[in-house]
Image (tube, rainbow, N blue to C red):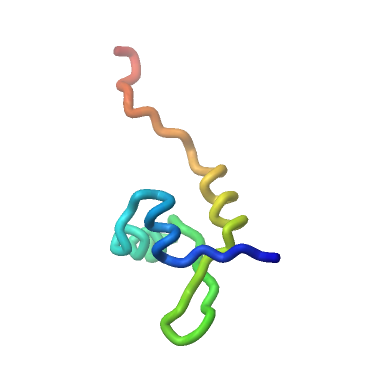
Length: 65
């Protein structure tokens, strides 16, 4: 069975606000959700995990310091 994540699940998982999630979607940075009904969307958990696994790792430490 396919596990679905709601907006609140995504925001909690990545410690982001709904506005950040909206901006990520508009910029094409985050996968689009599936429409479940009027005003209701959800993301396939496997697609979100695949997106997360494919992101580049960013180091917060300065290079060469």
